[in-house]
Image (cartoon, rainbow, N blue to C red; front, side, top):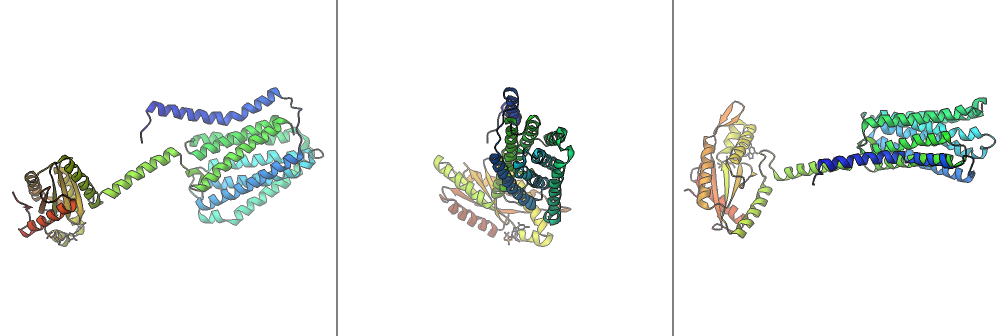
Length: 447
Ligand SMILES: Nc1nc2c(ncn2[C@@H]2O[C@H](COP(=O)(O)OP(=O)(O)OP(=O)(O)O)[C@@H](O)[C@H]2O)c(=O)[nH]1
């Protein structure tokens, strides 16, 4: 893939960051607009709408709780443990806010207090989740512990009762109570957001997480300046719902991919990993793992291509097959590892002796092949002779062991010996056999 020029790459990064900030702050524009241009006394009091909206929110958060819990159970990402608890706690503590809609007039605090209390719990859990980011996965016992989840379920139900008692107590009417809870919710979201900045927003789900925290913080601000049922109050609900929907989208994406919130990678990272994996695969598919030279398949593919090219340009080509003499003895006398070391050094030595346009490969065992494009028989014999001589003079080392080996070589010539790779191969093999028969450490045909 073509890489972006450095300047353009930087510019797009800056633009993306700017987009994050603008997305994150967009609710503030609406909050400011309502605060500026609308009479806070204007109200839209629809109990049915409120009840339905809360009902949908509870159902959605229970669904997301379940999905988040499934992800946590599979991947053990500790961040998801707190996220699950956040969604669960929110659903349980928010539900009475809908259930007590009918008491909006006779017990306004019983109706209102569950809102900030649920947001406070959600934001606290989101902050704790951020603090868990990057921690190792929880072990399976911890993930499957029923006590853990039932314990927290009980805690959330106790919080429901506590908020109810608080709402019916004499201090309930003091505005600082509701506002205090809302401010705490605001600061928890802000703390989560600031902490999240440390991890960066390169991972797409973490960017979504940060955006949600920004939404939650701003929804609390809107609730602080809102009055029950007025338009700022409805807007605050809408901002909170947006944050929630974004976060639930993140969870579903995690569920559909790695099941771990912290390891869903950005497209850039995935592209890079794909490119590396592709390179790795190509290398593995084309090279011989012991010697690092072309493997049989790759060599024969290249031979086919080169032959076609030489046919088109009507130039000669030679195929050389070579085989180590009495290699079995190296293995038998010094062990298989010494044999492997000899094969590696032989391959490297021959590779170094050849031109860049020559193709060299290991066909299997101790048999190698050299393809010499644009080379006629007499030149090929000279090259093969040089290779034979240099190999016979070279010392092969394995630990303290120092070995000398010889090789035999058979050459076939295009077009005289055949027009196809298999015909040339058969002829070169026949001549290699002749070289062995003739006493080894020789080239056939000879000069
Ligand atoms: N160490 C090692 N040995 C291998 C490998 N592949 C094949 N061999 C050995 O290569 C030897 C080939 O033996 P032969 O085919 O009898 O040939 P040779 O001993 O070289 O005798 P000539 O070819 O007739 O000179 C066998 O002992 C195989 O085990 C390998 O990857 N590593």
